[in-house]
Amino acid sequence: MNTTEENAVRHMEVSADDDDIRVDRWFKRHFPNVPYGQLAKWLRTGQVRVDGGRVKPGVRLSSGQEIRLPPMAPVTAKTERTHPVVPPKVAADLQSRVIYKDDHVIAINKPSGLAVQGGSGTTRHVDGMLDALRYDASERPRLVHRLDKDTSGVLLLARTRQAAQTLSRSFQGRTVEKVYWALVMGLPEVEAGTIDAPLEKRGGLGHEKMEAADEGQFAETDYRVIDNAAGRVAWLELRPRTGRTHQLRAHCALMGNPILGDGKYGGRESFFAGLPKRLHLHAQSLSLPHPAGGERLQVSAPLDDELHESWKFLGFNAKTA
Image 1: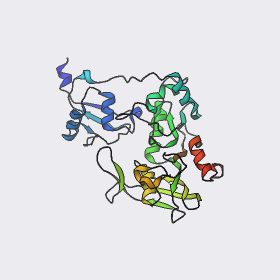
Image 2: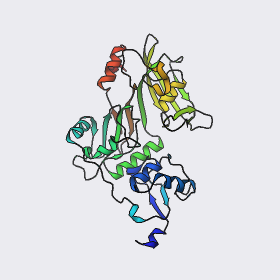
Image 3: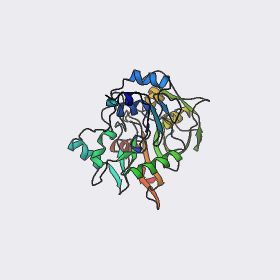
Image 4: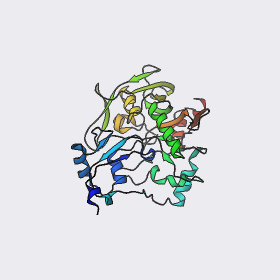
């Protein structure tokens, strides 16, 4: 064991593959032998810093940031990430969800219920299955943005490190146009507009919610009503200008029209008899600069069978949107 290395402060740069990951999950990924309590102490005392500043365990990292590491035994470092073998049936299912592919990017129509990244108690997630989407590429695809576990729709992946860096900058720089479809309870008083409400996470562990707060993070969502079913349920097009956690769910609830099936933000009133008890929120399309240049990349994801039946049940025609 090298005592000099143990006593040395080190710095590591956040890779594109780790873009948007939480600080605590970054440590679990790269230093699995470091207990959470030890990490919490390092963060609390400023021994671990990001770009020179103190951070909390839940802060999300961006590629290119520099993490200060306190002295520790080098043997705790996980120098190479290992990924579980993807079963053939699971791989085939994921490949069937590919809706766009070229030499630089892949887009899939993510199903509701599938997490994008792992976390506490989450063992099945897109990040753990990415080898199934390698195809003929020399490297594994990389995540460049996220969708909530219960949200379905377009999820974009980078096929090269360079594409990942370019796409990450696009998402961070807000040159990406995102369109979501949602079924909400009731009919908004105004047919189209902008929801401008800063959001802040509140509540205890396992019960956290994003709530309106003057001191919260700036959050804006454009919306318009596409159709409605006798004023009881409305079909909205949502265009987030910012990308806060649960932004669309919280903003719709604040407007008085919680997303159908969203018990967390809408309670029992968000469920409609005859329709599935799931979140009716779908990432319908993405438009952004192609990482290789040229024309903008535009990708759309059709509704899954379950959502299609909900639209049909309410008399909505997705083809006419």
